[in-house]
Image (cartoon, rainbow, N blue to C red; front, top):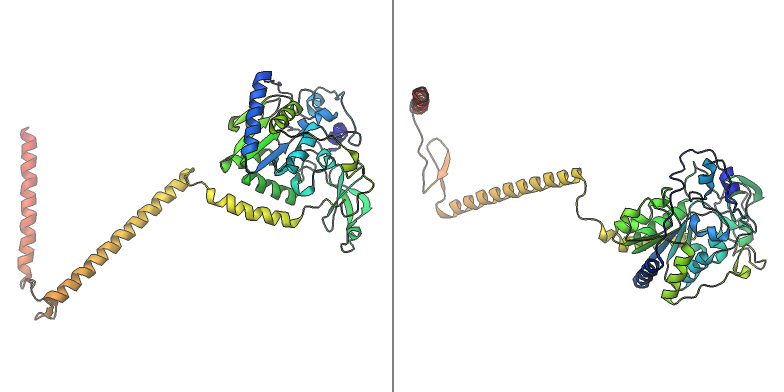
Amino acid sequence: MSCSYADGLSPYENKGVLGQEERYDTAETLRLKCGLLADWIQGARHVVVHTGAGISTAAGIPDFRGTNGVWTLEQKGLKPSMNISFDEAIPTKTHMAMKKLIESKKVKFVISQNIDGLHLRSGIQRQYLAELHGNMFTEQCDKCGRQFIRNFATKSVGKKSLDTVCRSEQIGGRPCRGRMHDTILDWEHNLPDSDLTLSDLHSSVADLSICLGTTLQIIPSGNLPLYTKKYGGRLVICNLQPTKHDKKADLIINGNVDEIIITVMKKLGLEIPEYESSMDPTRNSDTTAKEMDWTIPTSRIKEMNVLYKKVCKPMRRKRKTFMYERERTDTTKRETKARKQAFTVKQEIKTEDNNLAATGGMYKAEDDRVVPEGNPVKTEENTVDVETCRYSVEDVTTVEHSTNMEMNQTV
């Protein structure tokens, strides 16, 4: 239950903007926007979907910052009337549509902030899903770090010990003496490394990011869709309330998430499958121990790193956005220009010396100075002549200065 989960978290005052007014597009506007979104999905190369608590309200699980959200009502001293347990909830139309879109290769990856485990229970495989804030239906070993699926939701929150031993030996791994802990993050915890790494890479590679049922207030997960914009992709936000990044979105659809997804799936010609407990690893008793392993494959991270280097590195921005970058560039240009000028002067001097040597040759004067043979330099034998010349120049300067003074006084 969202309430029990929220109560289990440590006290935290800054929970974001709560209870914003909900907005609904008209039926015609919704139809046109959904058609445009379907066209973008059809033509996209790499689609990533970011999901929040808004996609699970249809399953009976309340959100947190909505008009009837857990934290919105908490400010008023109230509790949500809608509050089903995590074990009783089943995946919604949106959850099942994500599974179909992945199977149809329309969507490459799903990044979820939800802890309800409904993406897992819909049948999405681990390599296509990142759970940034944990999952009520998974547990993790504190020694080897492997994750395993549970048959029922955990009662603890905040990575606490579950008093069970690691199951890595059951899947052919080495015996591990580690203890299992829940995967639910508290406010002070860091996001899981593998999930966050895959989320960063997929968001950067994506040419279309779709946000469903989230106000994007929690960071860093709320900022991940901006990576798509950074590398030239599109951002679509589907939510009833205003979000943190509305100004940067290419398309905003204000409507119920299930209605939006049903319309988009019809436009794509895809049928949303119904939830079946036989496909739910938490309910299927025939699920093998190996299938209960929920650890992200390291090979998947390596593959995405290779793809990121191919797609994103060549598209790094060329324009210098920050002033210090521009100043540094200008200084470098000036230094380069000065070096080129100095090199040109040296080349000219070298060329002139070569020409002189080739034409007239060189000879020594009486005082052992080297001078060109064809154009001997005239030297002054008496230093008095030089001094006289300097004094005469200074005298002329003094006379000119006095004349200027007299003219100024006359005026």
